[in-house]
Amino acid sequence: MFVLVTGGSGYIGSHMVFSLLEAGHDIIVLDNLCNSSELSINRVREITGKKILFVQGDVRDRKVLNKLFSDYDVSDVLHFAGLKSVGESCCHPLMYYESNVAGTVVLCQAMAAAGVFNLVFSSSATVYGDGHPMPLHETLPTGSPTNPYGRSKLMIEMLLEDLTDSVHPWSIALLRYFNPIGAHESGVIGEDPLGVPNNLLPYLGQVAMGRRECVSIFGNDYPTLDGTGVRDYIHVMDLVEGHLCAMQAIHKSSGLRVWNLGTGRGYSVLEVIHTYEKISGCNIAYRMAPRRPGDVAACWADPGLAAKELGWKAKRGLNDMVRDAWYWQKKNPYGYQIS
Ligand code: NAD
Ligand code: UFG
Image (tube, rainbow, N blue to C red; front, side):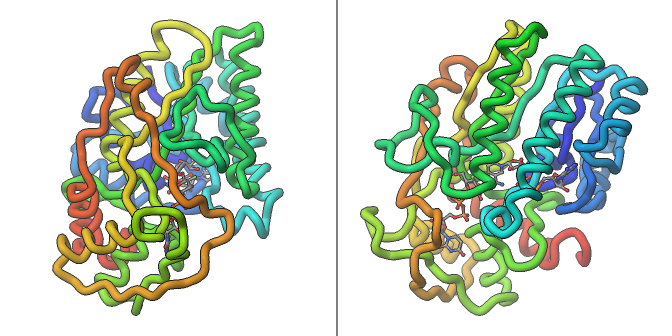
């Protein structure tokens, strides 16, 4: 039986493929390569010495999906494929609703036609919206995400919930990620954003390498310990290990399950910058800039439910995350393309 990983050549997906292979699963990756390249999959093949079936295709493409499900015996789908830039989603909302929401609809239709009902979905802490006291627990009502990307994740959560109330025996996990960072400790796979990084960690890496002059800190007047935004950063390897546990757990019974994947500890932008400086030995120039629209002051998880129900807990701390992000960055200053 195969595990289908949509978006498997992307940042989190490629780490997931590595962990699945190590756990003994046979894998098919479906990715349209709109934000990645097959080089990441080649690297995973290299470090594991294992076979990975790769299909270049789109989750919105019914024909590709139907063929894939008829050619291979798939037991589970881990659905990472989608667009993830908040800023881009504000400029091109239809692109986001089509790729993320319509893509999930087509994928679920193909799964149902093939009788495959185990699905793990990459959701986001963004679905909680603003205004809750921290930490965020799964029982809190979802809020109003402030951008089309976040709303597409919330819509998908709702449509998947509807599926679990339907006639088919769906077993679905909604995994709400906090802030995944870092890389596999080998430095062979990691995060390789196209163009100017939107996220803090890859931006810091490029400043440390001298590719960019300085990082802008978006807001230093938040009600946090030092005025800068606080996030719950989670090592990408801890995150993917959480998926392995969730995949096992949904096999036990049908229905919808929701788990936060975070560490339960928040760090400010300045704390992360100082940690990066300490670990890399590089000076990271920064300047204070206005708040970024749509950002919240602070966001961290209550990871207790995943600990209780999945026996999963993030093991790696901020130093480990930054050490592995930096190692990847140093070994691959220009990502996968030129190394
Ligand atoms: P990524 O862009 O590196 O990976 C997504 C992959 O999906 C890419 O390889 C891309 O080529 C592929 N893809 C996009 N649209 C597709 C389509 N229509 N058909 C087939 N393939 C398609 O992003 P990531 O950081 O690895 O994120 C993976 C998932 O996790 C996404 O759904 C994202 O929204 C979610 N997520 C990410 C974060 C984060 O901070 N990275 C946080 C919360 C949730
Ligand atoms: N930040 C800066 N400068 C930068 C980039 C970021 O100061 O150049 C700050 C942000 O304002 C925020 C923190 O660093 O306070 C983290 O920002 P990121 O862009 O790295 O991450 P976000 O918390 O904005 O969003 C991430 C993912 C979303 C996901 C969310 C879930 O990008 O897809 O985590 O919590 F929804």
